Image (tube, rainbow, N blue to C red; front, top):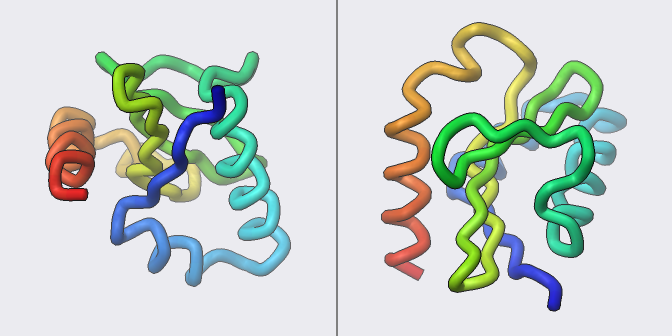
Length: 100
């Protein structure tokens, strides 16, 4: 059964700042997470938080098994700042899921 894909409110802004070709690849990868939320190149970061690489960009997302939801929390170029405050990211994801 496919998962529901949801985006954190900040993700749309992050996508708008990306170059067009990179954005197309990132969006295609996000859509593929509906069918397979744990592709072979995904890495578990913490708890229900995962990361997948798309060229120079990283998609950080949470998987909620009970609700069958993949929530995209963040998209960013690879940098140390990308992985800061992961606990805050997962808590924000849980709040966002409960608000919807």
